[in-house]
Length: 426
Ligand code: KE4
Image (cartoon, rainbow, N blue to C red; front, side):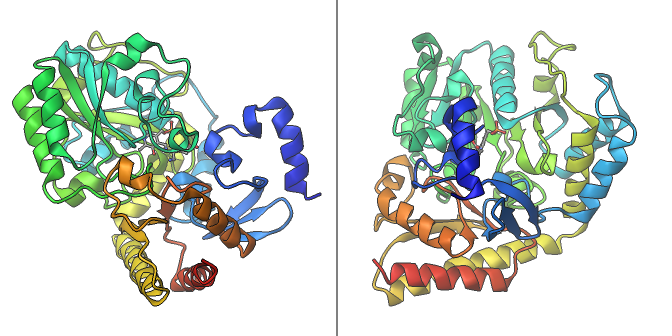
Protein backbone atom coordinates (compact mmCIF):
# COMPACT_ATOMS: atom_id res chain seq x y z
CA UNK A 1 0.00 0.00 0.00
CA UNK A 2 1.33 3.46 -0.92
CA UNK A 3 1.73 6.17 1.69
CA UNK A 4 -1.06 8.14 -0.04
CA UNK A 5 -3.35 5.12 0.36
CA UNK A 6 -2.39 4.72 4.02
CA UNK A 7 -2.97 8.42 4.67
CA UNK A 8 -6.31 8.35 2.86
CA UNK A 9 -7.42 5.37 4.96
CA UNK A 10 -6.68 7.37 8.09
CA UNK A 11 -8.10 10.61 6.68
CA UNK A 12 -11.55 9.22 5.87
CA UNK A 13 -11.97 8.28 9.53
CA UNK A 14 -11.67 11.83 10.81
CA UNK A 15 -12.29 14.17 7.83
CA UNK A 16 -15.47 14.01 5.69
CA UNK A 17 -14.44 12.13 2.54
CA UNK A 18 -10.85 12.32 3.79
CA UNK A 19 -10.41 15.82 2.38
CA UNK A 20 -10.89 19.41 3.42
CA UNK A 21 -12.43 20.33 0.08
CA UNK A 22 -14.57 17.91 -1.96
CA UNK A 23 -12.88 18.29 -5.34
CA UNK A 24 -9.64 16.89 -3.87
CA UNK A 25 -11.30 13.52 -3.19
CA UNK A 26 -10.99 12.17 -6.76
CA UNK A 27 -14.68 11.11 -6.59
CA UNK A 28 -15.23 12.28 -10.16
CA UNK A 29 -12.31 10.24 -11.52
CA UNK A 30 -11.91 7.32 -9.12
CA UNK A 31 -8.76 6.16 -7.41
CA UNK A 32 -6.90 7.28 -4.34
CA UNK A 33 -6.08 10.99 -3.98
CA UNK A 34 -2.39 11.75 -3.95
CA UNK A 35 -1.14 13.32 -0.72
CA UNK A 36 1.31 16.06 -1.67
CA UNK A 37 4.53 16.51 0.28
CA UNK A 38 6.12 19.48 -1.48
CA UNK A 39 6.09 21.56 -4.64
CA UNK A 40 8.62 23.55 -6.67
CA UNK A 41 8.23 25.51 -9.88
CA UNK A 42 5.86 23.67 -12.21
CA UNK A 43 6.09 20.43 -10.23
CA UNK A 44 4.52 18.80 -7.20
CA UNK A 45 5.80 15.71 -5.36
CA UNK A 46 3.59 13.29 -3.47
CA UNK A 47 4.40 11.46 -0.22
CA UNK A 48 5.57 8.42 -2.22
CA UNK A 49 8.14 10.50 -4.07
CA UNK A 50 6.20 10.65 -7.36
CA UNK A 51 6.76 13.82 -9.39
CA UNK A 52 4.03 15.50 -11.42
CA UNK A 53 3.74 18.44 -13.77
CA UNK A 54 1.15 20.47 -11.88
CA UNK A 55 -1.76 22.07 -13.79
CA UNK A 56 -3.80 22.88 -10.67
CA UNK A 57 -1.43 25.29 -8.94
CA UNK A 58 -3.58 25.22 -5.81
CA UNK A 59 -6.58 26.07 -8.09
CA UNK A 60 -5.02 29.33 -9.28
CA UNK A 61 -2.88 31.05 -6.61
CA UNK A 62 0.44 29.61 -7.82
CA UNK A 63 0.51 31.65 -11.03
CA UNK A 64 4.28 32.21 -10.55
CA UNK A 65 4.87 28.51 -9.93
CA UNK A 66 5.44 26.85 -6.57
CA UNK A 67 7.88 27.96 -3.89
CA UNK A 68 8.65 31.34 -5.42
CA UNK A 69 11.78 32.55 -3.58
CA UNK A 70 10.72 36.19 -3.25
CA UNK A 71 7.31 35.25 -1.81
CA UNK A 72 8.89 32.78 0.60
CA UNK A 73 11.34 35.44 1.80
CA UNK A 74 8.54 38.00 2.23
CA UNK A 75 6.55 35.52 4.34
CA UNK A 76 9.54 34.55 6.52
CA UNK A 77 10.37 38.24 7.09
CA UNK A 78 6.75 38.99 8.07
CA UNK A 79 6.72 36.02 10.48
CA UNK A 80 9.66 37.54 12.38
CA UNK A 81 7.33 40.36 13.51
CA UNK A 82 4.54 38.06 14.68
CA UNK A 83 1.75 36.10 13.00
CA UNK A 84 -1.42 38.02 13.81
CA UNK A 85 -2.44 41.06 15.85
CA UNK A 86 -6.18 41.56 15.28
CA UNK A 87 -5.35 45.21 14.77
CA UNK A 88 -4.66 47.48 11.78
CA UNK A 89 -1.26 47.15 10.11
CA UNK A 90 0.67 49.13 7.47
CA UNK A 91 0.78 46.23 5.03
CA UNK A 92 -3.04 46.14 4.84
CA UNK A 93 -3.03 49.77 3.71
CA UNK A 94 -0.28 49.03 1.16
CA UNK A 95 -2.24 46.02 -0.15
CA UNK A 96 -5.48 48.01 -0.52
CA UNK A 97 -3.62 50.86 -2.26
CA UNK A 98 -1.92 48.36 -4.59
CA UNK A 99 -5.19 46.74 -5.71
CA UNK A 100 -6.86 50.14 -6.16
CA UNK A 101 -3.85 51.15 -8.32
CA UNK A 102 -4.09 48.00 -10.47
CA UNK A 103 -7.88 47.79 -10.93
CA UNK A 104 -9.52 51.09 -12.02
CA UNK A 105 -13.03 50.05 -10.91
CA UNK A 106 -11.82 49.50 -7.33
CA UNK A 107 -12.09 52.65 -5.21
CA UNK A 108 -12.26 50.79 -1.88
CA UNK A 109 -11.60 47.18 -0.90
CA UNK A 110 -12.11 44.95 2.14
CA UNK A 111 -9.93 41.89 2.85
CA UNK A 112 -11.50 38.64 4.03
CA UNK A 113 -10.22 35.04 4.21
CA UNK A 114 -11.69 33.21 1.21
CA UNK A 115 -13.50 33.72 -2.06
CA UNK A 116 -16.67 32.41 -0.45
CA UNK A 117 -16.51 35.01 2.28
CA UNK A 118 -15.86 37.75 -0.26
CA UNK A 119 -18.86 36.73 -2.40
CA UNK A 120 -21.14 36.44 0.62
CA UNK A 121 -20.11 39.90 1.81
CA UNK A 122 -20.40 41.54 -1.61
CA UNK A 123 -23.92 40.17 -2.02
CA UNK A 124 -24.87 41.54 1.40
CA UNK A 125 -23.38 44.90 0.38
CA UNK A 126 -25.39 44.87 -2.87
CA UNK A 127 -28.60 44.08 -0.99
CA UNK A 128 -27.86 46.72 1.63
CA UNK A 129 -27.01 49.35 -0.98
CA UNK A 130 -30.02 48.71 -3.28
CA UNK A 131 -32.55 47.68 -0.66
CA UNK A 132 -33.44 44.76 -2.93
CA UNK A 133 -33.15 41.01 -2.23
CA UNK A 134 -32.90 39.05 -5.45
CA UNK A 135 -29.62 38.02 -7.07
CA UNK A 136 -29.10 36.65 -10.57
CA UNK A 137 -26.36 34.07 -11.02
CA UNK A 138 -25.59 31.79 -13.99
CA UNK A 139 -26.03 28.03 -14.09
CA UNK A 140 -22.62 26.40 -13.85
CA UNK A 141 -20.88 29.39 -12.28
CA UNK A 142 -19.42 28.71 -8.87
CA UNK A 143 -19.09 31.50 -6.33
CA UNK A 144 -18.10 29.55 -3.24
CA UNK A 145 -20.35 27.74 -0.81
CA UNK A 146 -22.45 30.44 0.89
CA UNK A 147 -26.11 29.39 1.01
CA UNK A 148 -27.48 31.74 -1.62
CA UNK A 149 -24.82 30.72 -4.14
CA UNK A 150 -25.38 26.98 -3.93
CA UNK A 151 -28.02 27.10 -6.63
CA UNK A 152 -27.12 25.40 -9.94
CA UNK A 153 -23.50 25.91 -8.95
CA UNK A 154 -20.47 24.62 -10.82
CA UNK A 155 -17.19 23.09 -9.62
CA UNK A 156 -17.56 20.39 -6.98
CA UNK A 157 -21.36 20.85 -6.83
CA UNK A 158 -21.59 19.91 -10.52
CA UNK A 159 -19.47 16.84 -9.83
CA UNK A 160 -21.69 15.84 -6.92
CA UNK A 161 -24.40 15.38 -9.54
CA UNK A 162 -26.87 17.53 -7.63
CA UNK A 163 -27.70 21.02 -8.91
CA UNK A 164 -28.01 22.38 -5.40
CA UNK A 165 -26.93 21.53 -1.86
CA UNK A 166 -28.84 20.00 1.03
CA UNK A 167 -29.15 22.29 4.02
CA UNK A 168 -29.97 25.45 2.07
CA UNK A 169 -33.34 26.79 3.24
CA UNK A 170 -35.91 27.21 0.44
CA UNK A 171 -36.44 30.80 1.51
CA UNK A 172 -32.77 31.53 0.94
CA UNK A 173 -32.54 29.87 -2.47
CA UNK A 174 -35.75 31.58 -3.64
CA UNK A 175 -33.94 34.91 -3.82
CA UNK A 176 -31.34 33.44 -6.17
CA UNK A 177 -32.47 33.48 -9.80
CA UNK A 178 -30.56 31.46 -12.38
CA UNK A 179 -29.81 32.62 -15.92
CA UNK A 180 -28.02 30.89 -18.79
CA UNK A 181 -24.41 31.84 -19.50
CA UNK A 182 -24.07 33.59 -22.89
CA UNK A 183 -27.86 33.92 -23.20
CA UNK A 184 -28.67 37.58 -22.59
CA UNK A 185 -32.40 37.01 -23.24
CA UNK A 186 -32.51 34.72 -20.17
CA UNK A 187 -31.22 37.67 -18.13
CA UNK A 188 -33.62 40.17 -19.70
CA UNK A 189 -36.47 37.77 -18.92
CA UNK A 190 -35.54 37.65 -15.23
CA UNK A 191 -35.25 41.45 -15.05
CA UNK A 192 -38.67 41.84 -16.68
CA UNK A 193 -40.28 39.34 -14.32
CA UNK A 194 -38.63 40.82 -11.21
CA UNK A 195 -38.91 44.56 -11.87
CA UNK A 196 -37.00 46.64 -9.32
CA UNK A 197 -36.34 43.54 -7.18
CA UNK A 198 -32.86 42.55 -8.39
CA UNK A 199 -29.99 43.77 -6.22
CA UNK A 200 -27.22 42.40 -8.41
CA UNK A 201 -26.06 40.08 -11.15
CA UNK A 202 -22.99 38.03 -10.23
CA UNK A 203 -20.90 36.35 -12.91
CA UNK A 204 -17.53 34.78 -13.54
CA UNK A 205 -16.46 36.96 -16.50
CA UNK A 206 -14.74 33.85 -17.82
CA UNK A 207 -16.53 30.85 -16.34
CA UNK A 208 -13.94 28.39 -15.01
CA UNK A 209 -16.07 26.13 -12.84
CA UNK A 210 -18.01 24.28 -15.51
CA UNK A 211 -14.79 23.69 -17.33
CA UNK A 212 -13.69 26.92 -19.04
CA UNK A 213 -16.46 28.77 -20.87
CA UNK A 214 -15.75 32.13 -22.54
CA UNK A 215 -18.20 35.03 -22.74
CA UNK A 216 -19.44 35.43 -26.32
CA UNK A 217 -18.83 38.73 -28.10
CA UNK A 218 -20.92 41.49 -26.49
CA UNK A 219 -22.40 39.34 -23.71
CA UNK A 220 -20.62 41.11 -20.86
CA UNK A 221 -21.38 44.53 -22.43
CA UNK A 222 -25.08 43.66 -22.58
CA UNK A 223 -24.95 42.52 -18.95
CA UNK A 224 -23.44 45.88 -18.01
CA UNK A 225 -26.18 47.72 -19.91
CA UNK A 226 -29.01 45.70 -18.31
CA UNK A 227 -27.67 46.23 -14.78
CA UNK A 228 -27.30 49.98 -15.33
CA UNK A 229 -30.76 50.30 -16.87
CA UNK A 230 -32.38 48.36 -13.99
CA UNK A 231 -30.51 50.03 -11.12
CA UNK A 232 -28.88 46.68 -10.23
CA UNK A 233 -25.20 46.12 -9.48
CA UNK A 234 -22.89 44.10 -11.72
CA UNK A 235 -20.57 41.92 -9.64
CA UNK A 236 -17.58 40.27 -11.34
CA UNK A 237 -16.36 37.20 -9.50
CA UNK A 238 -12.66 37.36 -10.41
CA UNK A 239 -11.46 34.83 -7.86
CA UNK A 240 -9.92 32.87 -10.75
CA UNK A 241 -9.53 35.51 -13.50
CA UNK A 242 -8.30 38.30 -11.20
CA UNK A 243 -4.64 39.09 -12.01
CA UNK A 244 -4.57 35.95 -14.20
CA UNK A 245 -6.10 37.19 -17.47
CA UNK A 246 -4.17 40.44 -17.13
CA UNK A 247 -2.78 42.64 -14.37
CA UNK A 248 -6.26 44.19 -14.28
CA UNK A 249 -8.08 40.87 -14.50
CA UNK A 250 -10.89 39.95 -16.88
CA UNK A 251 -12.42 43.42 -16.49
CA UNK A 252 -9.26 44.91 -17.96
CA UNK A 253 -9.01 42.18 -20.61
CA UNK A 254 -12.64 42.71 -21.77
CA UNK A 255 -12.80 46.45 -20.85
CA UNK A 256 -15.97 46.19 -18.75
CA UNK A 257 -16.43 48.15 -15.51
CA UNK A 258 -18.31 46.16 -12.81
CA UNK A 259 -19.69 47.85 -9.69
CA UNK A 260 -18.14 45.30 -7.33
CA UNK A 261 -15.39 42.72 -7.85
CA UNK A 262 -14.50 39.60 -5.90
CA UNK A 263 -10.90 38.47 -5.56
CA UNK A 264 -9.20 35.43 -4.06
CA UNK A 265 -6.47 32.91 -4.89
CA UNK A 266 -3.72 35.00 -6.58
CA UNK A 267 -4.15 37.93 -4.14
CA UNK A 268 -3.14 35.54 -1.34
CA UNK A 269 -0.06 34.16 -3.11
CA UNK A 270 -0.98 30.76 -1.67
CA UNK A 271 -2.22 32.01 1.71
CA UNK A 272 -5.94 32.22 2.65
CA UNK A 273 -7.11 35.58 1.30
CA UNK A 274 -10.29 36.84 -0.33
CA UNK A 275 -11.40 40.41 -0.97
CA UNK A 276 -14.31 42.41 -2.31
CA UNK A 277 -14.21 45.97 -3.53
CA UNK A 278 -15.53 48.49 -5.99
CA UNK A 279 -17.41 51.78 -6.06
CA UNK A 280 -16.83 53.99 -3.00
CA UNK A 281 -20.55 54.78 -2.54
CA UNK A 282 -21.26 51.04 -2.25
CA UNK A 283 -18.26 50.09 -0.09
CA UNK A 284 -19.04 52.90 2.35
CA UNK A 285 -22.18 50.96 3.27
CA UNK A 286 -19.89 48.43 4.98
CA UNK A 287 -19.37 48.56 8.75
CA UNK A 288 -18.00 50.40 10.61
CA UNK A 289 -18.86 53.25 8.18
CA UNK A 290 -22.23 51.96 6.99
CA UNK A 291 -24.92 49.61 8.21
CA UNK A 292 -23.93 46.44 6.31
CA UNK A 293 -22.12 44.32 8.86
CA UNK A 294 -19.08 42.23 7.91
CA UNK A 295 -16.06 41.26 10.03
CA UNK A 296 -13.24 38.70 10.34
CA UNK A 297 -10.66 37.79 12.98
CA UNK A 298 -7.89 37.06 10.50
CA UNK A 299 -8.95 39.45 7.73
CA UNK A 300 -5.88 41.25 6.36
CA UNK A 301 -3.58 38.90 8.27
CA UNK A 302 -0.04 40.34 7.93
CA UNK A 303 1.54 37.05 6.81
CA UNK A 304 -1.12 36.50 4.15
CA UNK A 305 -0.79 40.11 3.04
CA UNK A 306 2.97 39.69 2.72
CA UNK A 307 2.52 36.69 0.40
CA UNK A 308 -0.27 38.25 -1.66
CA UNK A 309 1.28 41.69 -1.96
CA UNK A 310 4.61 40.21 -3.13
CA UNK A 311 2.85 38.08 -5.74
CA UNK A 312 0.93 41.10 -7.08
CA UNK A 313 4.08 43.24 -7.13
CA UNK A 314 5.95 40.61 -9.14
CA UNK A 315 3.05 40.41 -11.62
CA UNK A 316 2.85 44.24 -11.84
CA UNK A 317 6.60 44.68 -12.36
CA UNK A 318 7.06 41.85 -14.89
CA UNK A 319 4.49 42.19 -17.71
CA UNK A 320 6.47 39.60 -19.68
CA UNK A 321 4.91 37.00 -17.35
CA UNK A 322 1.54 37.50 -19.04
CA UNK A 323 3.16 37.25 -22.46
CA UNK A 324 4.67 33.91 -21.44
CA UNK A 325 1.43 32.60 -19.90
CA UNK A 326 -0.60 33.60 -22.96
CA UNK A 327 1.92 32.11 -25.42
CA UNK A 328 2.00 28.77 -23.57
CA UNK A 329 -1.79 28.66 -23.31
CA UNK A 330 -2.31 29.43 -27.00
CA UNK A 331 0.38 26.92 -27.99
CA UNK A 332 -1.24 24.20 -25.88
CA UNK A 333 -4.73 24.79 -27.31
CA UNK A 334 -3.51 25.09 -30.92
CA UNK A 335 -1.42 21.90 -30.77
CA UNK A 336 -4.19 19.95 -29.00
CA UNK A 337 -6.62 21.02 -31.75
CA UNK A 338 -4.12 19.64 -34.31
CA UNK A 339 -3.88 16.37 -32.39
CA UNK A 340 -7.66 15.99 -32.28
CA UNK A 341 -7.84 16.67 -36.02
CA UNK A 342 -5.17 14.01 -36.68
CA UNK A 343 -7.17 11.55 -34.58
CA UNK A 344 -10.43 12.45 -36.33
CA UNK A 345 -11.91 13.63 -33.03
CA UNK A 346 -14.01 16.75 -32.64
CA UNK A 347 -13.79 17.32 -28.89
CA UNK A 348 -14.28 20.87 -27.65
CA UNK A 349 -11.24 22.84 -26.47
CA UNK A 350 -11.84 26.15 -24.71
CA UNK A 351 -9.64 28.65 -23.01
CA UNK A 352 -8.05 32.08 -22.82
CA UNK A 353 -4.59 33.02 -21.63
CA UNK A 354 -3.33 30.46 -19.11
CA UNK A 355 -6.78 28.88 -18.56
CA UNK A 356 -7.77 25.91 -20.73
CA UNK A 357 -10.19 23.00 -20.82
CA UNK A 358 -10.60 19.87 -22.96
CA UNK A 359 -14.25 18.72 -23.01
CA UNK A 360 -14.97 15.19 -24.17
CA UNK A 361 -17.94 16.26 -26.27
CA UNK A 362 -18.43 17.23 -29.92
CA UNK A 363 -20.87 19.92 -28.81
CA UNK A 364 -19.60 23.49 -28.81
CA UNK A 365 -19.43 24.33 -25.07
CA UNK A 366 -20.91 27.73 -24.25
CA UNK A 367 -22.96 27.14 -21.10
CA UNK A 368 -23.89 24.69 -18.32
CA UNK A 369 -26.08 22.43 -20.45
CA UNK A 370 -23.55 22.06 -23.28
CA UNK A 371 -20.72 21.53 -20.77
CA UNK A 372 -22.73 18.68 -19.25
CA UNK A 373 -22.73 16.78 -22.57
CA UNK A 374 -19.09 15.93 -21.88
CA UNK A 375 -18.39 12.21 -21.41
CA UNK A 376 -17.22 12.37 -17.79
CA UNK A 377 -16.27 8.69 -17.77
CA UNK A 378 -13.87 9.28 -20.65
CA UNK A 379 -12.54 12.28 -18.76
CA UNK A 380 -11.99 9.98 -15.74
CA UNK A 381 -9.89 7.60 -17.88
CA UNK A 382 -7.99 10.58 -19.32
CA UNK A 383 -7.26 11.95 -15.84
CA UNK A 384 -5.86 8.63 -14.58
CA UNK A 385 -3.87 8.04 -17.79
CA UNK A 386 -2.20 11.43 -17.36
CA UNK A 387 -1.67 10.98 -13.59
CA UNK A 388 0.12 7.68 -14.15
CA UNK A 389 2.45 9.51 -16.54
CA UNK A 390 3.30 12.24 -14.07
CA UNK A 391 0.82 14.87 -15.25
CA UNK A 392 -1.56 16.24 -12.63
CA UNK A 393 -4.65 17.91 -14.08
CA UNK A 394 -7.85 18.79 -12.18
CA UNK A 395 -9.56 15.58 -10.96
CA UNK A 396 -12.87 16.67 -12.52
CA UNK A 397 -14.09 17.67 -15.97
CA UNK A 398 -15.78 20.82 -14.70
CA UNK A 399 -12.60 22.60 -13.63
CA UNK A 400 -9.83 24.50 -15.40
CA UNK A 401 -6.26 23.68 -16.38
CA UNK A 402 -3.95 26.33 -14.89
CA UNK A 403 -0.59 27.09 -16.52
CA UNK A 404 1.96 28.98 -14.39
CA UNK A 405 4.97 31.15 -15.19
CA UNK A 406 7.16 28.22 -14.12
CA UNK A 407 5.84 26.04 -16.95
CA UNK A 408 7.84 25.94 -20.20
CA UNK A 409 7.30 24.50 -23.66
CA UNK A 410 8.99 21.35 -22.36
CA UNK A 411 6.19 20.63 -19.88
CA UNK A 412 3.53 21.51 -22.46
CA UNK A 413 5.08 19.19 -25.06
CA UNK A 414 5.28 16.31 -22.55
CA UNK A 415 1.62 16.94 -21.73
CA UNK A 416 0.58 17.07 -25.40
CA UNK A 417 2.43 13.83 -26.17
CA UNK A 418 0.70 12.04 -23.30
CA UNK A 419 -2.68 13.45 -24.37
CA UNK A 420 -2.13 12.25 -27.96
CA UNK A 421 -1.21 8.76 -26.73
CA UNK A 422 -4.38 8.69 -24.63
CA UNK A 423 -6.51 9.86 -27.54
CA UNK A 424 -5.10 6.97 -29.60
CA UNK A 425 -6.83 4.62 -27.14
CA UNK A 426 -10.28 6.13 -27.78
P1 KE4 B 1 -12.91 29.82 -1.91
O1 KE4 B 1 -13.96 30.03 -0.87
O2 KE4 B 1 -12.74 28.35 -2.29
O3 KE4 B 1 -11.59 30.52 -1.59
O4 KE4 B 1 -13.38 30.55 -3.26
C1 KE4 B 1 -14.63 30.20 -3.80
C2 KE4 B 1 -14.67 30.56 -5.27
C3 KE4 B 1 -15.36 31.71 -5.64
N1 KE4 B 1 -15.42 32.09 -6.94
C4 KE4 B 1 -14.81 31.37 -7.91
C5 KE4 B 1 -14.90 31.82 -9.33
C6 KE4 B 1 -14.09 30.19 -7.58
O5 KE4 B 1 -13.49 29.47 -8.56
C7 KE4 B 1 -14.02 29.78 -6.24
C8 KE4 B 1 -13.30 28.52 -5.81
N2 KE4 B 1 -12.75 27.73 -6.87
C9 KE4 B 1 -12.61 26.33 -6.60
C10 KE4 B 1 -12.07 25.65 -7.87
N3 KE4 B 1 -13.07 25.48 -8.85
C11 KE4 B 1 -11.72 26.07 -5.42
C12 KE4 B 1 -11.28 24.64 -5.24
C13 KE4 B 1 -12.02 23.96 -4.15
O6 KE4 B 1 -13.26 24.18 -4.00
O7 KE4 B 1 -11.36 23.19 -3.42
